[in-house]
Length: 227
Image (cartoon, rainbow, N blue to C red; front, side, top):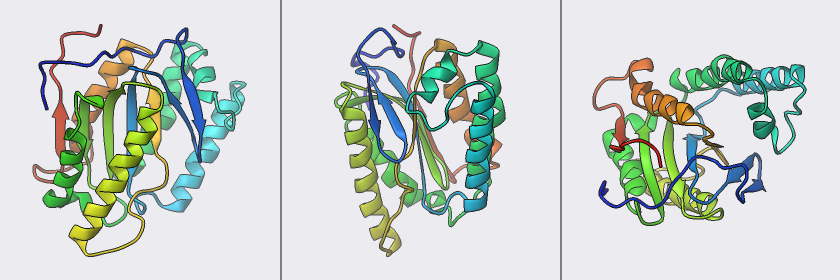
């Protein structure tokens, strides 16, 4: 990956064009906007834990006048008082990721050759089709901070990444079938504070999960502020 020439990037601009694509989850995208992405392996979250989290999220949003089933619930959350939005992140967002860090499932990405497949795929078109800022390959999930050149590229690239990785990982592990949980989590970053928080979160994720060197891969691009 080259740190010398950077494609244009910025924080989400609500006044500029953006789009929402409906799949199992709504996906927001905007040309050049920095996005936080999470994919998880198909066995990474027990169904009971997943159901309880979604119900709790629905109750929290409902208490604050937000329909959890609405495609623009994230935008509605951003319009709340800043402290309330932070409370949501602390109470629910962190709980979701703590459940991932508990290490459910086979955790095949703990295997260095498997993690290398993910890392090499992420690196391949960096600074061409997309710009990577930070990523970490955990035993059962992946976090990525990246910007994409246009609204359609984000989902297309994520689909390409996941398909290629799954094919190579299944070949390595001598297995067949679905590797990743369908869809994934993505969020357009609204502030530099959020950007810096997520960079720290990604860097600190292995320590919080109790991982040792060799059980994860991490990358962080050197930047001097945001444009």
